[in-house]
Amino acid sequence: MDNVHFSLLLITISIFSFSCASLIPSETIIFPSIQAKNHIKSLNLTPKESSAVPSIRHAGTDSRDVKLVEKQINLIDGTESGKPAPSLGHHAGYYQLPHTHDARMFYLFFESRHSKSDPVVIWLTGGPGCSSELALFYENGPFVISKNLSLAWNDYGWDQVSNLLYVDQPTGTGYSYSSDTRDLRHDEVGVSNDLYDFLQEFFAKHPEYAKNDFYITGESYAGHYIPALANRVHQGNKAKEGLHINLKGFAIGNGLTNPEIQYKAYTDYALEMNLIQKSDYESINKIYPECQLATKFCGTSGKISCTLAYVLCNTIFSSVMKIAGNKNYYDVRKKCEGDLCYDFSDMEKYLKQKSVREALGVPAGLDFVSCSTSVHEAMVTDWMRNLEVGIPSLLEDGIKVLIYAGEYDLICNWLGNSRWVQAMEWSGQKDFVATHDQSFTVDNKEAGVLKSHGALSFLKVHNAGHMVPMDQPKAALEMLSRWTQGKLADSNPKSQSSTHVSDEL
Image (tube, rainbow, N blue to C red):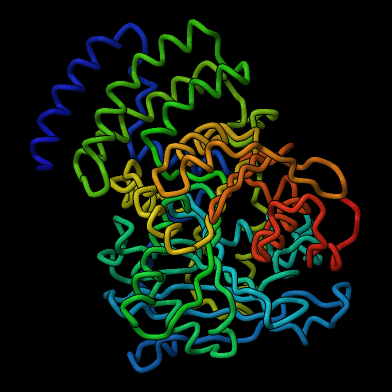
C-alpha cells in the first residue's frame, strides 16, 4: 500500500512544485537532515560529534544478568530545601535495554522532597533526540543552574509533589548510548517498547514505588512518545505482562500529536499573532491541501509517504518563519539572539565536567549529546504520523489526559493542540466541546484557561511559550499537583504544592 502512496505523492509533489513555484522559494523547503541541524542550532546545543552512538562499553553492564546499574548521587550541598541533600534519594543509572544489540538508557531519579507515597512522574523531552536534562535544569527539576555552573534548589521543581524520573531516550540521546547503530529507533513501537522494558526493571529495582500512582509527562515531540508509551503500559497491564504499572494518566505540553490538524494551525496562529499578513496567509495556505493529502497517506504506519509528508508540510512552517524573520518560534514575544533562540550552554558545560560525569556514573569517553542529529534523522518517518488515534481508548478506560500549551509558542501552538483535542472522537467528545472554559487560577490570579470534562482536560497557559515550566514554574507546579489530585478544575483548591512553596512567582 505504501508503494501506491509513494506514486500518488510523487504526482502530488510534481503538481505542488508547479503550482507553488512562484509562491514559495525552493530554499524554504527544508529536508530532514537540514531540519534536524536547524532545530539543534536554534537551541545552541550542537554536540561535538555528529554520531549519537559512540563505540564504548559501560563497565559493569556487559553481563546480561545485570540490566540496571544505579548509584546514589549528590549534585548539590546545603539545606535550603529543609533537608540536607544526602538525606534525599537522588539516583542516576543505566539500564541495558534487553531487545537491542548494545543499548544503555541513562536516567535520573529524584525522590519526592515530602513523601515517598507521592505519585511517580516520568518526564520525556522531545526533539526527537533532545535530552531530558534540558527540563531537569531549566524547567521542572530539583535544581536550577547558574552562570558559574553552581546549582541551587528550585522551589517549583516537580519533586515537590512527585517522585520524579527523567530518561534520556531514544538511544543516542543525552548520556544514553550504544556501540551499534542498529539500536537507533525509527518509530514509536521501538521507543515505547524500550521505555516499557525500562519501567519494568525500574519498578523491580524500586518495589516501594510500584504501587504508587504513575503519570507520564513531557513536551514537544513527546506528543508522540507519551501516547505510545501510555498505550504500551496499559496494554501490558491488561495482558498481565510483568509488573503491573499503576498508570493513572498522562500530560502533554506543547506537543506534536496530530500533525494533519496542527500543521493547518500554523498560518492561523501566525496571522492571529501578526507574524504574517492576510496576503501571506492566503498564499501559504495553498500548500496545505498537498500537506494534508500526504499526511493522510502517512497515517499511522507509513514510511516513504511519511518522509514526503514531512518535506511538504514543513514548507508551511518554514514559509511562515521566512516572513516572520528572527522571531523565536518557541516564544513569539522574543527574538532570537543571532542564530540562537535560547542559550542552554551552561547545562552542557556543567554536564561535561569530569567531576559531574563521575558523580553520575557516566562512562569515560562518552560525550553528552543534548540534541542528537542522528536520532532526529532516524525518527523522520515517525514525524507526521498521527498519535491521537490511540488516546480515545485510554480515555474510555479512565486514564486521565491533560493537554496543556503555553499561549506564545508557534511551533506546537495552543491553537493546533486545542483543535485536535476537540476533534478527537470519544464518548465524551460532545460534552467536552460544549463545556465552558473556566479560569485556572494561581494566587487568585488567572494563570490560564481550562476546558475539562471527564478524564480529558485542555489548559491554555498564559504568559508562557513552548516550555511552560520554564516560563511559568509556579503555575506548572500547581497544574501538576492539582491534576494528579483530581482537583485541576477546582477554582480555589488547597493543593499539596501550595503548602510547600512560597507565594513569590
